[in-house]
Length: 386
Image 1 (cartoon, rainbow, N blue to C red):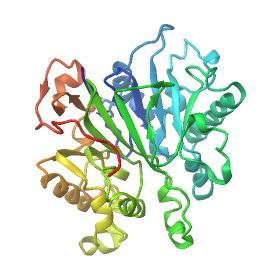
Image 2: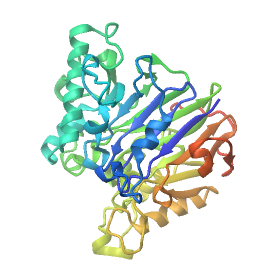
Image 3: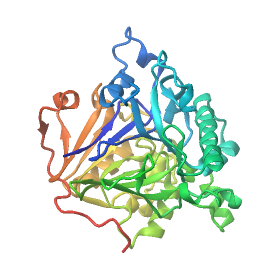
């Protein structure tokens, strides 16, 4: 048996599919441009076709994912949701529309509470937020045992002022483990919830963190045949203050350790430094605490940048200096830095009983064989504190 992680080429945006050893699927964010649906624009990857090819059909003939996780409601993390996914009551599903059926969603109320004060939500973000509220109300009205596929939700982190106190059965608090997928305990994974960070008592620090802290941050432990073979750390657009705080809180644990890192904020310099790259250039200083948090590598780790092609002439993100820092982190453990812009096809990783490998281009489509990338995580790993 194997698990897989596929990173789709969506430019400066995120779209990542995890296929667990159990066969269940978790999709993290989407960024599907209208031009990606246009056959007359072959240079724009048809990522929705790539995704659909990787999904199974349920007994009703619907393509489905077990979980959709929205890390935060920026446009480049949710574009195309309404166009391609059914996020509504199951009874309203249209076979003619043939959208992907979403069995469960993972959402944070803090993400939307902060978004409402710090930024204007795009239409797809509003669409998701409406559906999250519908599913929460369905749980309140019917209870957990009566909530079935298409109505399920897990809440990632507590809301302010006790607004999630009555949702304990579907609530995962920060620092706790996610163990259920689509309402079922899945023994092929756990996921440590590291963010959104709760509100700070330090008003000055809270002001600095308010917008940046809103991304959901998870460290997945992916198991194959019962043993953890890959820790995958993903954190949306979390920026430097968040990673500094996580390092302060967890530097004496293994909660930030990873075999695979999705570089936050599309290889942005803002996740590594308080200094503007545009203003300071090569004089900009790295935050050592943030870098330490993002450098908790296992031997042979892979650092994945989900962004456009990285150039020295780029604005931020992506940032060539951030790329150099991540390359140095990878090089120190005989790992590699990879970018989704290097191919028009998804970048696919295979998690096996001997570690993690990067799939060849042929295997990304038909999976006949894999290309070794150096074995990562040969032995089972603890995923607990201390």
